[in-house]
Image (cartoon, rainbow, N blue to C red; front, side):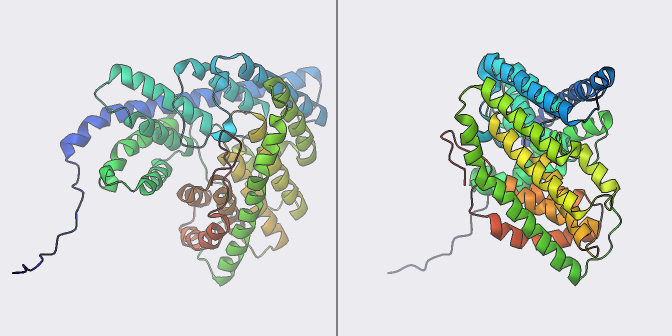
Length: 430
C-alpha cells in the first residue's frame, strides 16, 4: 500500500533570541568607538603634517604652495619616506595594497605601526588614495588581538566584522553604508547558518552606529556637496544619467584593465626604495598637468569643485578627471598604502561636472551623482556602496530613484569583468 506523501514545510532559519544578541552590544559599542578614534587620529595627524608640508614650509621658503617644483619635490619625498617605512618597518607595512580590498586581512600587531605611519605620510604627502583600506586593516587587527585577549567568550569571527562595520560607519558618517556592505557580503555567502539578515546585522550595525556617531561628535564629516537643488527627475534627466553613468563605468574600467600592467611595471623595480620614489615622480608630473586639485584623497577637493560648478570649462573638468584617475592608478600600483574609493569619487565628480559644462541642461546633481555611481561600480564592484555614496553626495530624495534605474546599464558594463584588485601572482580578481 502506497502512503500519500505529505508535503514538507519549507525550512526556515529561526530568529536569534534577544538574549543571544544582547551580550554583543557592549563589545560592538566599544569597537565602534575605538575604531572611529583610530580613524580620526590618523586623519588629524595627517592634516597637521599636510599643513606643514604644503603651507608652513613653502611659505617660509618663499615658494608657491602648489608650484610645479614644490608639488614634484613633496611627492618624490613622500615616495622616499613611505619607501623607507615599507622597507624597514616590521612586516613591511602590510601586504601589497594592490591585493587588498575592503575585506581586510588579519595582520599581527607588530605590523600596525608601520602601516599607520605609511598611511599618514601618504595622506599628508598628496598621493591620490584614501584612508579606508589601511585603516580598516589596522582596526581589524586591533579588534582581533584585543578582543581575543580581553573578551575571549566572544566568537573570534565576530571581531573582523565589527571592526570593518565600525570603520565604514566612521568613514562615511553613517551606519547605512556599513549595513549595505555587510548585507552584500552575507548575500554572497548564501549560508543558512547566517540566520535572518537583521540578526546577522545587529552587532556590526551597532558598531557602525557607534563609529559614525563618535566621528560626527569629534570630526563633523559631511558628504553633502551643496549642489544646486534638484527637483523631480524627468525623462531627459533619466537619459542623461544613463549616458553619464555608463561613461563613468567605461572610464573606470579603463583604469581597471590598465591596473595589472602598471602594477607589473612598478613591480619590475623590485624594491620599495625604487618603486615608491618612482611613483612619486610620476605623480608629480601628473599634478603638474592636472593642478593641485588632483592631489590628496579628493574629499575636500570635490567640495571646491562643487561650490563653483561653472568655474571651469568642460575641457578642464575632463583633464582633472583623467589625471586623477591616472594618479589613482599609479598610487595604487607603486606601493602607497591607501584605498581607492575617495579618489574615485573625485573622478566621478569631475566627470559629472564636465557633462554639465558640455550640456548645461544636465543638472550638476544628476551629472555628479550618476558619474560617481558609474566610476565606483567599475573601481570597487561594490553595488550598494556605489549607490549609497552617489546618493549621499546630493541631498535630494528625487535622485535615489533615478540612480537605482541608471545603475542597471552601468552594472551590465562592469559585471563579470576584472576588478581593481590583484591576486598575489599579479592576476586580476574577477
